[in-house]
Length: 338
Ligand SMILES: [Mn+2]
Image 1: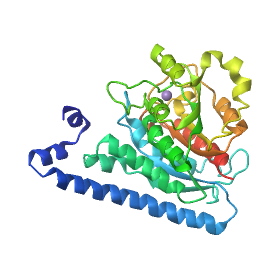
Image 2 (image 1 turned 135 degrees about the vertical axis):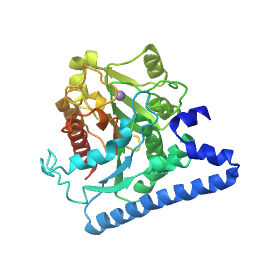
Image 3 (image 1 turned 45 degrees about the vertical axis):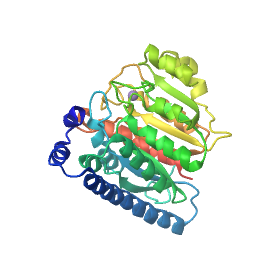
C-alpha cells in the first residue's frame, strides 16, 4: 500500500478503507478498461477502412500514444511526450514530405488512433500487470486492421515490453529487434520493479518474443548489463567501437526467417547535443545523421516501432527535442509504410 500511496492512488485507498467491496472496484475498473479499448478499436477500424478504401497500401503506419512515465527510475516527464511529438510532426516550420519522398498527409502513409489513456486507467487503481495487458491489447487492435502497422509514441521505455509482446503474438512468432539506446535496459529488475524502463528488454527476451536483438548506441552499461546481454544472446554494439562498427550498422539486413523487424528508438541513443530533452543525459552518443543512415539503409520489413524516452520537461524552450523525436517518427513512418 505504501508504494501505491507514493504513486498517488489516494482515492482508491479511501474506497478500500471505506469497505467498498473489492468486486465493485474491479467491475468499475473493467468498465473503464473496456471503454478505453473501445475507443482505440473504433478509431483503428475507421482508419483501417479509410486506408483500404483509398487502396494501394500494403503497409500503413498508424500512431498509438502510450503516455506512461511512472516506470522510469528517474524522471517521469515522458508521460507528457505524445502530444508534443504530434504537435512537432505537423509543425508549420517544415513540410510534410519525408527525406526519401513519402507524403505524410496521405492517410495511406500515416494515420493516428490516439492514446492509450494510461493516466485515466491508473487513476482507477489498475495495477501494472493489467495496464501492460491493456497496452498489448491496444497494439493488437491496431494490427487487426490490415494494412495498419503501429508506431508507438512513448512514454518511458517500459512500454516496449507489452508492445513487442503484442507484435510477436499477433504475428505468431518471434521477430528481430533493432534497439537504439544509450542503455541496454536489460536489468533483471530495477529497484524492485520488474516493469522498470531499465528492464524492458529482460522481459522481452524471457518471453521468447525475439530472435535477434541488436542494441546500438550503448555507452552506459554495467557488469549486469553485459552479463544479461550475454545470457540472452544480445548483439551489443557500444559507442566506443562505433567508428569500427559503422559500416556494418549502416548496412544492416534483418528479419529473414522471422515474422518481421521491430525498431525501438530511445531518443537518448542520440548525443545530448542533438537531443537534450531526455531524462538520462549521456554524452558520447550517435549523431542524428548516424541514426537516419542506420534506418534509411536498413533492409527489413519493419512491422512496428516505438520512439520513447523523450522528456518534454527537459526540452529547450523552443522544443528542439520534440522536433528531433518528430523527425524520427516521420522517417520511421517512411520506413514502415509501403
Ligand atoms: Mn536509454
